[in-house]
Length: 411
Image (cartoon, rainbow, N blue to C red; front, side, top):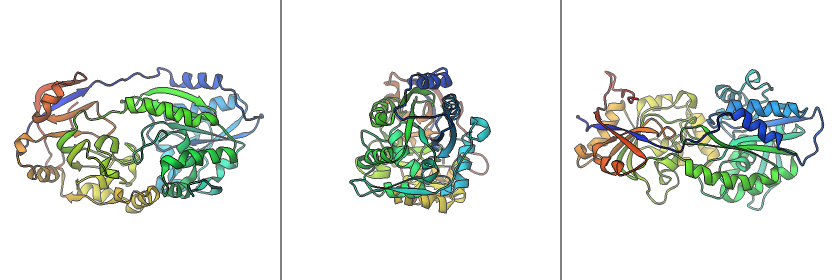
């Protein structure tokens, strides 16, 4: 099948970022006056999530240094729910791949799945919390604030969520997801703050290219307010495809290091995960590969319509199903139609179109890398009219190697 020509598109995003992230963290701690009494030699559990936060190692390392300057003894714990196959070893390995090791951050890594029940909140949700966090004299959490992939609220992913869900390990995360997270995470976080000595939380937002846009250290009573404030900023910074109507969206790769949902529903269409209005309306979604950092966890594969046998062969079904059961979004582990290779997947999508020569199609690397993408001629008029978009008018061809694997996009 002969495919229509593509054109390279460049988006202009707000890429405002902090030049010296470590110094920004030190400045926040210099202004920090804890309301909880601290004494030299006390221990601090530093909760670190599994999201691909751009400057995570710097954030953790500098936080550890600042805590040591307060004469405290920090250690790092995973705060990532069921990720890493819901094992202590797996979660430690996730941290290692994110650059978080005892050597790199200057603090021991303590990783297990033990939890303690702290009680229930009004919704009925039982709140579980990491036992190794409760064993410390104090708790600090670090998290990126961003739109969540499964619910809408004034507070979504941020400091409250890492306390209520991430620090609950697999048992706590699974229980939380049985309830309305938008109405449960703040009460759950408040219960945790009543039962445990939460010292502070470090919140960050990132620009569309992953650079750290803003940093703020908050006391426990400020968590929800800061989450609300930073979420508004995160929505403004969220990268998107500047077209709402496509016949085909071709996604080169998906993965847990790209989005907790594998592919960000805020980019490909929230309806693909949660139902509702089809906006943006990308009628056929093809995903071609699974990132190595996913370790076979293909959560979100169910949002695709077509995929490849290469993806299916890489899937660790136990990890994928566990993630789906924990989140409660069972459709996230549904299987799209697998085709023999990339060429077959694209040809199948084109064969479903009434006029393939005028296909409205976009190709992206993944849902977090949207500064550059490819688009077909049919959508160029809309892109030319967008002042934040540059269109390279040199035509490009969708090319495949002898095995039918698509060749990488030109830079």
